[in-house]
Amino acid sequence: MNRATTIVAVGLVAGGCFAAWQWAGRPDIVALVQRGGAAPAARPAKDARPAGAAVAVVTAPAEVVDFPVRRRSIGNIEAMATVLVRSRVDSQLLTQHAKDGQFVTKGDLLFTLDDKELRAAVARDEANLARDQANLTRTQADLQRKRELLSSGSGAQQQVDQALSDAKAAEAAVAADEATLDADRLRLSYTRIVAPIDGRLGSVQVTPGNLVRASDSGGGGLVTITQVKPIRVAFTLPERDLATVRAALAQPTPPTVRVFPSGSRTALASGPLSFIDSAVDVASGTISAKAVFANDDLALWPGQYVDVEVELGSRPNTVVVPTVAVQAGQASPYVFVARPDGTAELRPVKVAATDGDRIALAEGLSAGDRVVVDGQLRLANGTKIRDTAAPKGQPAASRGGDAPAKDLSESGEGANRPARS
Image (cartoon, rainbow, N blue to C red):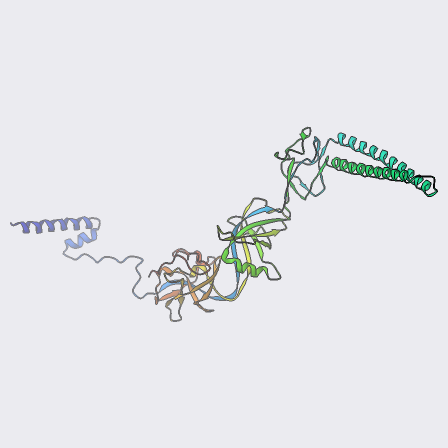
């Protein structure tokens, strides 16, 4: 036996062993072969689709509506005013009239300081004023007498001039006493520390019995008052939205701003857009904006981060389709349109705006066109389709199978990929 014959024989033996190993778990095939029959053909896969069969899809109609123009951002709640209450005189804190976290109104008494020294100073000023007023009365009477003597020829002009000078000096002394008295009375009023604004107190930093100083500018003060009604949110918008925001602010009714807790779609509050900055931030390419809320229910708290949604008007008579219908393509976004003949048409579209689960289209569709919202990954241009109803109580967008369309930007550009057939 030569070498080639040996190789062929070894190959046949190996093939027979492999076939026996494959059929070891199939008694029906082994028995059939033993009887001299042929092995059955391989069974088709369960999910194989017969050639020419229609693909089951779910469609939805394109609608023409007034599409809202909204912009979303992340904002920070900030107080309209924050005041650090300090003492304006050096004294001892006697009484605390407010407690931590209390809501106060402007003029409410917060603290009382020791006022004995200042009351004594006021009494001294009042006594000095009374003395100088008496002196003023005397000098004015003396001036009057000197003038009468001069008019009768019995007096000299020098005496009149001296009396006039004394009267003016007494007037000046009375004015100085009044000013000193007013200043000490003002300092005395500082011993009663009242709330300068409406708001909520923070933690009280100084307790009764401690000395407080007006010059202690580096300390934490007595207490901080934060205004929480009304309150505002600060956020930023991209530079490209500046023209749209300015146009909305020029309308008689300012744009509406709504805020939401992070990850929720239940609005905490809504209010008017009140401010946009006078310049664009060069570093970030954004513009700062603010909105004011009444916050009567105290749903918003200073320092809180929220999701912000700005309503900037609407696009009238705009073609709108579900977001899941729009797919990202290499050249442009596209949708599959269900033709009347039962086939799918791949149609490029131009996205105008996106709002949650809806997309506004500038080009590509007309009202009444039915677009595929489930089953796009099994389609190509011209594929036969069979429209099926979405399960009851479950929107087509939530069904398994195809991945949802990527979020497309305002211009419709983004990371695109070709359709898979």
